[in-house]
Length: 136
Image (tube, rainbow, N blue to C red):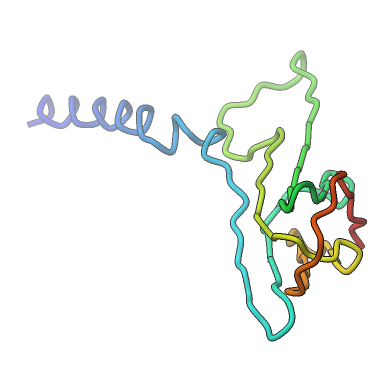
């Protein structure tokens, strides 16, 4: 009976090692987003846990709202060794088509790991150049 249990424990180790969450932890990062529609505007609530306000860049170009986040963490590999890593550090981006809106009316706020972007529904002439939006 003891020999019967031993291979199962060994298999469990490999099951954990080759599980999708173990292999794709860093590549499966996405900006989870809720989009709320109101009478005159849309509100995008974008989850960016772990990023600071200065790590996030927001721009509008050719009718697309682009959210970019970049975070790097430097560790001293001579004094420490990571045994298990689940948190993601690096860059990610996501674009949302917002159409021809007045870019001056777009507002953004970052609070507790959530970027809230208010986009007016009013459609205007499409601007040709990239516009960056300040985040409060």
